[in-house]
Length: 240
Image (cartoon, rainbow, N blue to C red; front, side, top):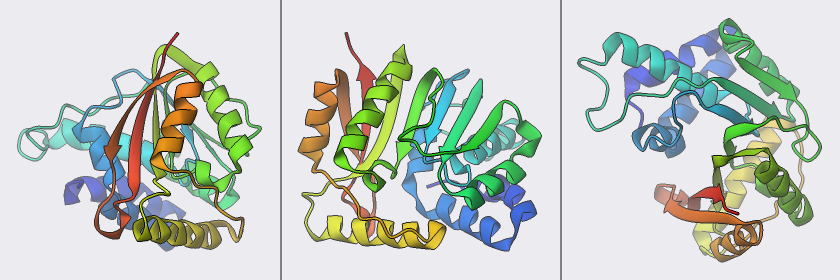
């Protein structure tokens, strides 16, 4: 997990957006292993153009900005010894459908505009800029199966030849743990946006088959803890 000092650094800018935004940022960064995994394994390179689909209140951007600042100031004694130095992205382009979250992201990260920008739009129709890294963390199950495929086709078209898609999904074949994930995601959707759309889920094998059909080379890693062990991080690279 992220060091407590880094969580504090990354979440602090959300105080300007209000107590709820600040506390949510702190809790999400503390409990979700995605952010620590990205940093610990160097999955985002220096100078990357990042497209963040379903960016929410911009926590990936806040984590990367906070990590760079904390590493710069405290690396000698505080940065985890086995982690590579955090990346400094060239740009981050976040897209999310929830107006409130986009507003909070813009408030918290306004000091970094225009290098980091957020757009309130639907990933099914929004324009995707060219990117070196596309992040889609817990977002594709909010759209139907046809839209999932269409979004992934557009992701592939937007990726650089040596680009990477970082896709976190839940394995629908993981029994009761998958049911827990669906319940949590449904609750998050309701709390954040008031929407009650159904979720479209696939098994790990179905995700891998779809990405293979779209000409991605895929590796997969467990990405959860406790009841959330159905989560998977899919690392997908386009191939000719």
